Image 1: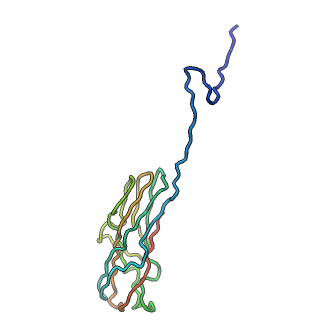
Image 2 (image 1 turned 60 degrees about the vertical axis):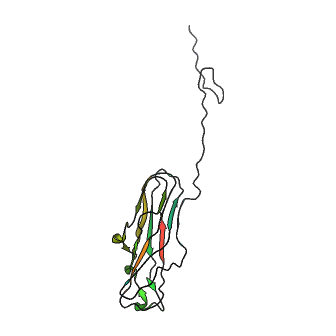
Image 3 (image 1 turned 30 degrees about the vertical axis):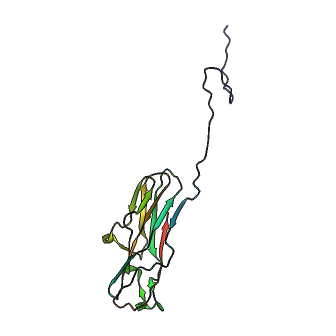
Length: 177
């Protein structure tokens, strides 16, 4: 009668000769900064112009930094003007330029890091959009890992013919998700 023997599993660090002895290794890659957007501190003066004309100028560098280090590292940066438009004086109708008269175009990226596809919300002046609604300013549609994009958007103000003289102030809000 033959003896039956069962092979016992090797314990950690002990294996018979000519046998591969395995150790499972784990580690963590951290992403401390997450997804952030940096905008110029204001106020930013984009120029001057007459009633019935246009005022155009760049806001300064906007940067999205994605340090989440995810497999699908996509994001969308949005832009919208604050409610109430751009005002001077008491903010009456002739002292207000509505957000429908405020146009935005991101233009091409002035710099990117990481891999993937970076897409301007409005590639050129012909694609400019009013800031009365939230618009896509820039996005990253493919890629993985850490990345960033910087652009210098242009704001165009279509000054109403009935606008009064003054320094107009309003807010352009950027966000990223």
